[in-house]
Length: 148
Image 1: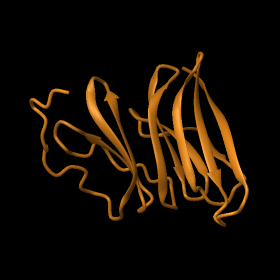
Image 2: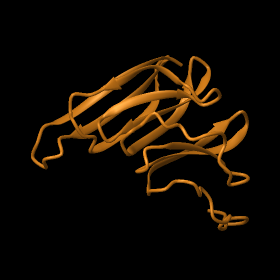
Image 3: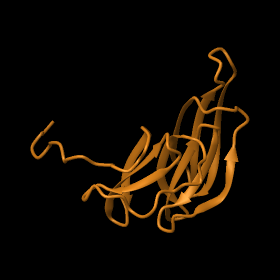
Image 4: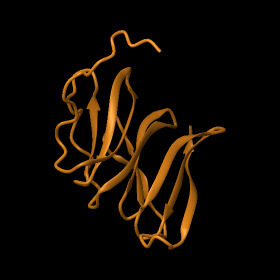
């Protein structure tokens, strides 16, 4: 592994008022970005070259955000978020608007993990979660968001 040019790039992602629970990196219009979800109920998009926030925070979540993922849906850049109440929303990263309806799982609290990816020609989110009681039911869901 080559470490040439590797090093700390300074303090990034200043703006959340609570801890960051999930973060992912990718590209938006050829720029390196990060998308973060926080206990403050917001999702923020960051320009990794400047360290500055891009646009306003996405605030549709009243509960802490525990998972974020980014990808392409119908050729448009999107971010998907899951909040503490197991509600998933998909947002258009260019417009800053929610796409479609909120998807809600039957488990009352999100305690688990998720992954956004492509399955054949579809964009999907695989979610595994369990009830907040340690021995409670576990669930794995595959949400089909639509065509890639």
